[in-house]
Amino acid sequence: MTDPIKVTKAYLDILNQVFEIEKKLSVLQEPNSIQRNVNKLKEIMEQGLGIQGSDDTTGFVYHNPIGEDYNITRTDCEASIAGESTDNLQITEVIKPIIRLHSGGAGFIVQKAVVVVKAKNNQ
Image (cartoon, rainbow, N blue to C red):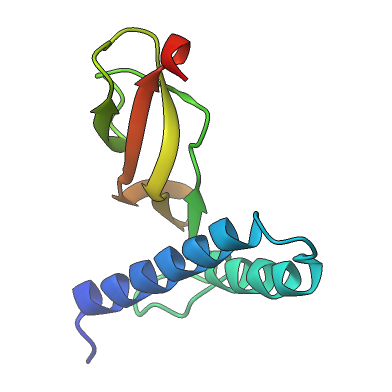
């Protein structure tokens, strides 16, 4: 039997790599053909993964919180603050996305985003 923690880590590694590819695609001139492949990978990860003991709706999704507001009560991100101000913060860089596992209608965070935040007036 495969250790579920290792399986989850492997899925997280895959999703983090897909996220990195998608970030790099955003700066290319004509990313359309590659973006289709990235979208297909994301779709595969969102659909049933055949994880032992789960139903067919178990899957992973990631969220890129770039541009979103940030405050210290936010529990889905680990942030480094760029600059001196800690008021009116916005996420300016995402190193790792938020990854959630959805199963049977419920979902929970399996990876917090790693982000850089900056005061909106300092950008």
